[in-house]
Amino acid sequence: MNLLLSLLLRGINAKLSMSTLILGIESSCDDTSAAVIRDGYLLSNVVASQAVHEAYGGVVPELASRAHQQNIVPVVHEALKRAGVTKEELSAVAFTRGPGLMGSLLVGVSFAKGFARSLGIPMIDVNHLTGHVLAHFIQVEGEENRLPHFPFLCLLVSGGNSQIIRVNAYNDMEILGQTIDDAAGEAIDKCSKVMGLGYPGGPIIDKLARQGNPKAFSFSKPHIPGLDYSFSGLKTSFLYSLREWVKEDPDFIEHHKTDLAASLEATIVDILMEKLRKAAKQTGIKEVAVAGGVSANNGLRNAFRAHAEKYGWDIFIPKFSYTTDNAAMIAITGYFKYQDKDFCPMDAPAYSRVTL
Figure 1 (cartoon, rainbow, N blue to C red):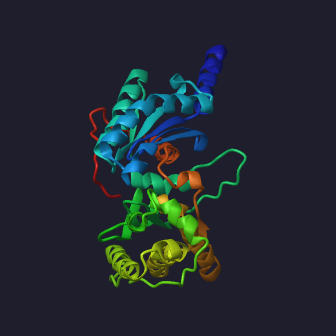
Figure 2 (figure 1 turned 135 degrees about the vertical axis):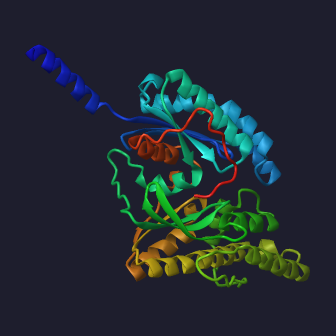
Figure 3 (figure 1 turned 45 degrees about the vertical axis):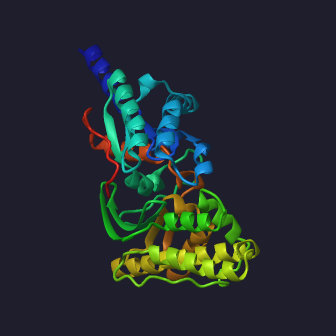
């Protein structure tokens, strides 16, 4: 009897001590990524980027999905290898279900379904935007891991989205304001293209802006009520101003590109921060985070630090590797959903358009 009880207790303890291992897969646009998280701690995060789009000045959906098909198996293999785990040890597979490019999403979704089915483990669907917000909860062994407390505000800025979100819980997010037309990242990319600087525009504008005068040129700012954003007017203002200046001096862009980049960046950052200040004041929330591809911009990061000092905000700025599309943020979201046994059926389709 005692032996039986001892074996039973040992079995229960073994089960309790078992780790939760989540494989995350991200393929929403032009980055193929896989990551492994154990009990909230990141073990590996592998990203394969696609240089093929640079020649076209933007992402070509058909080329992106073909590159995903080539990359997905080696990327997942490398993520498991770096994490030091086998596929049989995985608890679940988390994948980006949307939003994104349908052809790209289908590669990740189809792989996740086949992989989970073959291993007999659950699948967890993740909203790409939720993943960006929850990237702040990724922890790494041996590093200082400061995590935000609920509720907190998050400025989500990328090539496709510009939103102010009140995060009440990992699965309870409220959009307080969002762009009514173009996203901040899209405006940066388009203006960079107009200047003939290449694609993607974000890193190029960021680099040039560090050497320029942010007050050299002024561009129109929108007057949108509430907490919503608009960037189409700024884009048009930049284009028309540039046309006039180039008429007078054909080499105007070459002579003034650092000042143009700095002024454009400063205008976009001012627009973003003005509404974020309003949101913080209205909600009384002092914990403020930034997420998404544009959160890699140094001008925006510096503005966050300045606001923290001036307004007493407790700010959360992600590592550069968590700003762009990555599977670590998908895996951490999957980890939270796994705790609640929030799984998705095998016939769940991908979706290209969706909000939080």
